[in-house]
Amino acid sequence: MELTARPLLPIPSPDPRCALTGQVKLLAAECGLSVARVTTMDPFPALEPLMLEHIAAGRVTGMDWFTPERAVFSTAPRNLHPAARSILAVGIAYRGADPGLPDDGQPRGRISRYAWGVDYHKLLKQRMRTLHERIEAHLGRPVEARLLTDTARIVDRAVSARAGLGWYGKHSCLIVPGFGSWVLLGELLLDLELEPDQPLDRDCGSCTICLNQCPTGALVAPYTVDAPRCLSFQTIEQRGAIPHEIRPRLGAWVFGCDVCQEVCPYTGAARKPADPAFTPARIEQAYPPLRWLLTMTEDEFREVYRGTPVLRAKRRGLARNAAVALGNVGGEADIPWLIAALDGHDELLPRGHAAWALGRFGGAAARAALDRARQRDPDPWVREEATLALETFS
Image 1 (tube, rainbow, N blue to C red):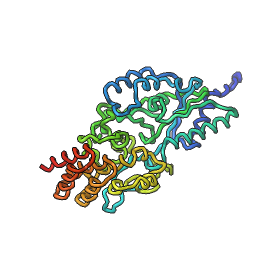
Image 2 (spheres, one colour; image 1 turned 90 degrees about the vertical axis):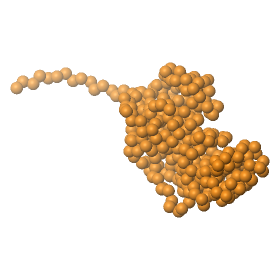
Image 3 (cartoon, rainbow, N blue to C red; image 1 turned 45 degrees about the vertical axis):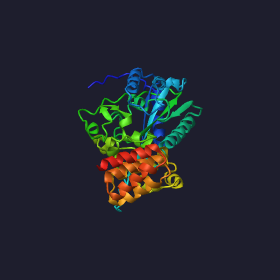
């Protein structure tokens, strides 16, 4: 059999852009970033009208920083770093082991998982900063970069979705393969020409579990959250009184809410990373005793929650939330604690919400305390709350 000689063809050189992109992603993993994908610096023109409609519909009422001007600015990444040529979308998976609710007979509150450990804003920035340094060391030259987390004027989820890091769930969170929505997002805007990834062609199908299970109906439609109704907004961002119609739906949540993520089939099946940064150092950082939250001092609050996102709610906010939670999950043994808060808490928000909780329990002692507050509390709003609570007795 005669063999015909074939001409030798040159082996094509690897695309330097692809090689650099692969190396950057490898470095990202070594720096503790669970996922990393690339997209361009192109704007998001379709996002602008959606965000403006969201604002006009009142779905961000209470977030004074979320203005139309910010929305327009956020849809053009070059507003943040004109010299950048690529965006590296990164994330840290945070669903760790659950320490479990102690069986000690104490009514306890619930804190959202992302807040169990260190403040993720600082953690993300720290790991992205390390990655930036590693990239510069690999290239042997300075690299212009801007590091962003969710407080920056960029739409994290839109960037990550276009980069193929995940896809939008109907609860409006980004679902990342293997991790569900238990992922905290950040971006590095780099003056490097990296190979963009493609968006994922996936969705939630016909599933609507998250919409059906939201405690307050804040998921008003697929992919749409009405923030003022959301328990995360009410327990963290709300600086005043929690609306009466929402209080019974708060359950035991005192900081944030994970219900829409917990019921999601994708996030329920997510693997649990062993990142110690999100392991609570003490049980109060995951399941705090409600009576203690109601009576803690400023020094105790800062000692227990130092370095965690829970500080954002402030002591008076957590005490307010604890009063509501006791009204929802507490028992008769908690009435003296609520009476003490109504009679003597130094902040008016816990006093007023303790009045509401006492109105749910009833009884002679609660009635007497409410009547005292109705007549003697120095704040008119607390007096009004006590009056309303007394009306529930009849």
